[in-house]
Image (cartoon, rainbow, N blue to C red; front, side, top):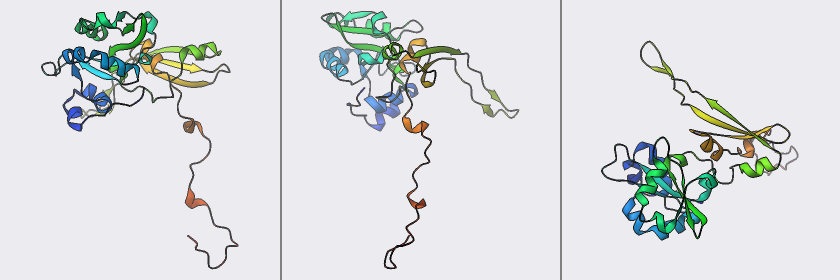
Length: 237
């Protein structure tokens, strides 16, 4: 996704619920369902171009536990073909229902938006966009498998954490999660992803930057000694 939308003011992020602050900092404050309905065509077009719009069921009365969706590009959905689809003209008057279908716990699912039966964007639970890997590093699952690579899935039950006798936390709790690991045809691991579901783990399957695997020491310009045959007039550091 391209970061084409203004990140928004720090005030907007500060007022957002903690779980959504990272998204507000990146994509701007959430809009209400009615505002999204009024600007529907423009917002869908923005999603097609790579911009995310956060949509809140109620941005004022539901700050205790708001339900937020994201109108987002198709590549934020792991398997669009298996998701419910809505024609754009049908989704607009029923937008509250579409947002609820995308965010309802625990059986919410991405809702695909179509134009002339062609998928163009998606409404997803906003939390699924938190901690997505940087652009350009995600592993295309279909292409990876077609090239002879493999993907293994694991389930981590997590741990509850623990405290000392004085009540101080000495081990942070780890939530349960699914882990997807991608191996190349030769067997070496090239990336992994984690999430609350198998689909999210596959969505977050990414290849770490090459520099993480470099055997070369970091460049230290001060470690290079000048040649011994420099003339006396040369400046030495």
